[in-house]
Length: 633
Image (tube, rainbow, N blue to C red; front, side, top):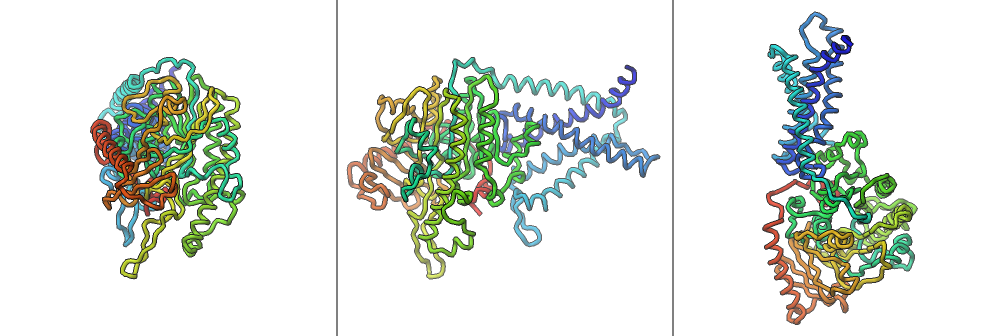
């Protein structure tokens, strides 16, 4: 017993440094993340939970790092400096605190100071790209750690009674750990018992336009698995998103607020003042989990707020096992770029994870959101699902525009066939779970040359209205209209022709499971529509765009009005007579004036609500995520 006590007494100073170092590092990083609004917390923007998760990781990291440094230093002393006063234990402790200080100062400067792009050796470098990070930023970080380690080593050396100092530090750290754990528990009140709520599965496909399921333009089956599923569900034929690109669209789906209210934009993350669907369900006893394949769904954007856990397709399993999965939202160099992921079966990876989660034992109802990256550009379907070979970028650009758009559309449909096959696996896993609400939709549509226009400026440089493919350019229906399929456990389903918005998804789910809809949500329950208790209401979109400036749109009773801020122009269409929106009609028509008045009242309402709910300040810089997705170069 005496020998064991002696061993513990000798090891205690090192253990004290480990637990103190882990707590210090976790608190520092959570604080710096909070300051620069990049906190990938669990749930996001929950400081005590973030600090606890990060401190847990850094404690394990401190034990490994400090032990490695101690072992190397002890070996070096045994081999070269037996008679010196060099202390391996002091160097190991110094390494722990040095990493905590240097790493956090480095990331704070990079994030808060927007220190990303530097011109080094005659070439512009981006410190948040993996290659440039390890070539330039990582060495700087290592030098910082080394410098801090020397400083801490000297501080420990000047301390007269180092054993007593470390003991006091350990006691304070243990008290700090207890306080942090208590704070975390207090910040998460226990949810009320759930009265048999159904499971909820939200499935979203990136860039899935409304006319790309069922049969394709050649009359061949495109989505047989989805067709079988939809036969027993409600199919909303005129569903539209409220933004034509991912971030504001998902912010609307999850908060049930219009983009002008929740504030998500290229340089702003989702606000923190409004309730999200995941937060409300979690507060009522749901287990919330997200399975994601798009960088714009990571914690840096705020879309994971309310999810207790999430899975990202290329997540490092070692970091995840330590509970530090939010690293992928906070440190862009750890994520792959869009170019590096082209040969990965991302949809298969995500489906495997969804099935694993569904088969896991649990005592709570589950809200699971899975977002498939396919069929997002670049369109690279597996060969067995593609009707034409995938061309190289050079081959694509040498094609005339019409042929290029046609080949893009064929590749795009190949990706949809691939996703449909994976959905078939998912539907098979749901067969033994009848008490599940399933919603399937998208974040926006996709265009293939519908608005492509060429013109020449000074006969030197060819320009066009936009690139002709993709999204985020306009508010025409090829980018706004998406499929919306909803299957309730106790309803037979049917076809709904009324125009609806994806802003109605969250209220519909809450209404069905019997949870009160928060006052911050602007959407309505679609149960009122399918039950005939409510008629068609105006569906709005905009104003945030990736390209071409702000635009707004309203659809009501088969008519549509688009407003383009840059040109101060209104475009009015009769969707029944002109579904492709090719021929604008005169604005003098009474229906056009009615839509114009609706748009103005909608703007005023959004301005009033934005004062209470919109994101303030610049928020997270999302350029890294936008680059990874191919939106900006």
